[in-house]
Image 1 (cartoon, rainbow, N blue to C red):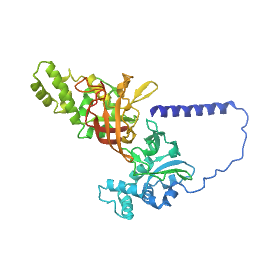
Image 2 (cartoon, one colour):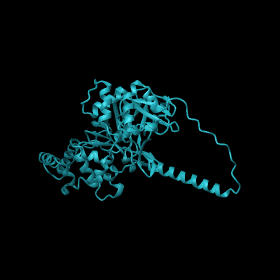
Image 3 (cartoon, rainbow, N blue to C red):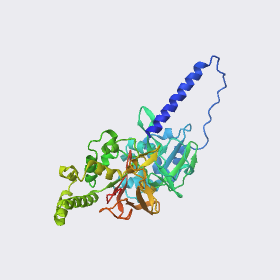
Length: 419
């Protein structure tokens, strides 16, 4: 994303310099041409079309609350707008009201809730996040991974309008999504200044970088402690902790939960103790006690088994990566719907930075219509070591599509091993 912005700024600079050189090198008066008045496109603008569509009345109420109606009705601009119809808005409002507004309530109740309970700034954030400042028909949405990363109307840097929050349209077969929200249609609704696609519900803009929600997850205390151990001696973005908080990355993380780490660590420590001559029963009991707290990663007595390099090697196998210009970077946001339903779909990870030939993680999603009911991930390695590749038990996603400004994470119930 930074590369794109830097190239764009350089291109603008070159254009400005070129224009300046052209101007100062000309010593004759420029030819004057008669002005051609701009002709506004005919037909309804975005807001006008939504206002005229009875089944979009609740989203129109949200637009009114946002104060953005004049902007999206400007026919000198061009937009792609993702609009949940009234059914989709009811799903959204029922959720954010904690069920206080039941799905069966009259439209007027939902409209009143928007007016009274959604702040104008929040309404604007939602509308802007579901707005791409150019026209994209469904035929323009790609099926490849990584997903398309499109700029939204949310500007993150007030000094640079190019730095924007992004959303992620995708297509697999005939089904389309915005992030993990299915497009339900009607789509490709042409208006004078753009196009409208309809979504199952609101695609809400993320609020923080990955670090805050992941560290606040009550089932990821070992993951947090493992990162602290892995970061020993690292600096800058070499620290996984810093990477989680770096706003312009675009990551997908598979985060093993506490039970997953406890299971792995108990096995690792048991094996190490037995190798030292400790009786198996005693080794198992001691290992279970040591692995019963995240402090296991900061126990100096275990540093020989849980070296910073070993822990980091395991963790980076849970960061998906894509290759660009010969390097593997954490630059691909995979929502649950972007994992294939067929077995044998592989995704590279940050392990490929050191071992380019590593096949990655095998993933398989289970779909129920346009939604995913589960994902299984299988690592190359097994514990104890020696199992056939990709024959070990799969990790199951127990929490999916946790979205942040700089990526998405899925919580899984096993630690994946790269070898």
